[in-house]
Image 1 (cartoon, rainbow, N blue to C red):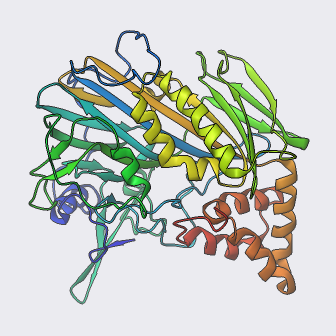
Image 2 (cartoon, one colour):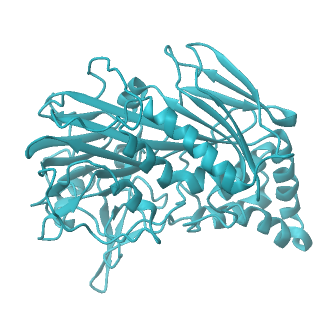
Length: 478
């Protein structure tokens, strides 16, 4: 539940939000409170650009001419050994600077159960390049999810939040899409505003400043926030001003930032067998980009790269590389980082953007213990998942989404099932609960998977509710 005293600000003024939701759910207006429809075609939709020749790094940089838009981001999922997507991914892994707008507070949700989302869209950033200052209209959509965080401020977002209660002059705000206890006035309202779908962010008209503009950026020290890595690129600085509910001063940043939660299928179905066997099936009608299979331990790591990706309808069969004789973790991280940067360079991102992406995520991707698959989704899939509208039309758009798949092997599932079974006995429940608590942000999806394999026993419900409501800004073992 979001309150008026929260340290993370909400973009729109609350009276404006009340005006959105009251008409449909409380009958005070003739308006139906419908979400904003798709924006009119205001220029180029991402993906509608000609094929491009990608030069080798370090020549990958803005050529100094034309209006160019680049974007990178990642989706994180947890899959059971059978390939099933596991819900419970609302927990945060990295804290964000206090100036970021947030639907959630510290990654926690009110209520006895969490919102069952199986895809966490993390840190897409959108860069703008232009030889001269200009203004551009920008809107982002999320048909199968909602946006949870963003910066700078937006002129409008959907679904809205609402104030269901005022006690002793204190108004409490709640999120109808993410609060399972939200007091909807009717089933119609619950269906209309309770779905994790039809998300949108409308930045409206942003200013793309001159390339040499000296602007003040909000404080985000690199020793505290990985946020600052994304600033270390040659993109034009941006200014957003005149947003309802935001600070009166203009907001500046090097990029547009957003995150989200959703429920949707991914382009590759990953399954796991015993002994580290991994199968990655391409379910799309086009090829998948570079694939990495990682095995990360506490002090060492190993990876296998497949630059050829996976052909349309094809299946990649691999085995998680053994940690026996694997290089020390620092050496592994350096080698894997260089390999991922090479793969990102080949997508058309500028080299400094590829470096910024790896520096932002290398702790979570490369140092978190476990077996995972990383792969580059086709740009057309990204365009369908999170449509981007920009006006005037950029001369080129590059959108790169790296999918992070946390793989639960049969052996890992067996260990989780054993721990979950011990939750039934008061003499072993504490130790069993610590098994899951130590998993940080992945405690909920792994406990959910274990309880599902046990047939959803009632003794697991209070432990699941406790973990689901917990704030996990970072995982204990990372």
